[in-house]
Length: 201
Image 1 (spheres, rainbow, N blue to C red):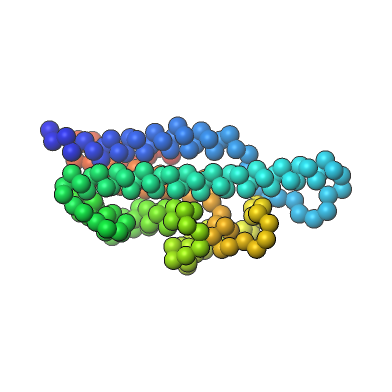
Image 2 (tube, rainbow, N blue to C red):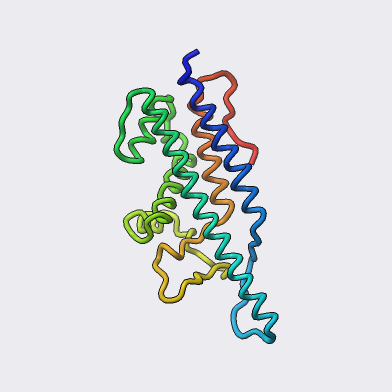
């Protein structure tokens, strides 16, 4: 057996463990409130509870964004390692993903949902890392829902005007989609017998 054939399965398992043991476990400990109270509170206790709820949602949103950044970094390092084994060099994320798919005979066009989620994850990571810029404008044009807040369950707590990038609003389900896409990517290029193509979450 060629040792490089084991890389997709190992990468898949490592990403899966990180998502299940670290991401889910951590997010389950963070309270998230569906609707935040606005306006004047009748008592100090109500005011304090409202402040705590705002901080809870802000903290959860920041945690989700941080995990998206970390997950994207892990996946990009995995792709680079896989590409290096085959002597492939790519200077951009898009080319790296396409070259790795090509090595594994995966048609990304036929897996648009997966490819779209991987691209979205990478754009989110760039926005979290750099703030306003090209990735922020591209992501907002592509996925407006990441800025929608119809239930008013998130407010930026930092004083002063908020840059567009700081209004990015993430949900646990967004991370689940990204984790599923990474899982499916490695499962679909796994050359070993009986690859796992879809996660259970």
